[in-house]
Length: 60
Image (spheres, rainbow, N blue to C red):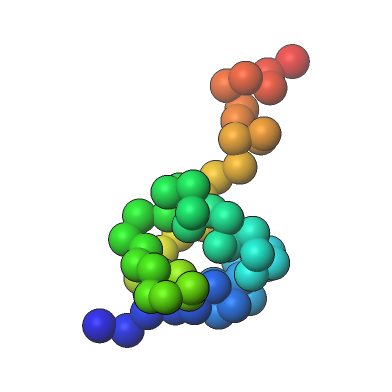
């Protein structure tokens, strides 16, 4: 099975590799695998939604 690295996912999603690693560590990306110190993401992984921009709680 092919996997994406945190760097590859970061480039696809427009965020830093460190942020991708934090999302993996927090369990917010399903299907990730840790190989040594490296997080590997499934090729179809989606960027998790940012809870700060939840429309339900931010309605004015």
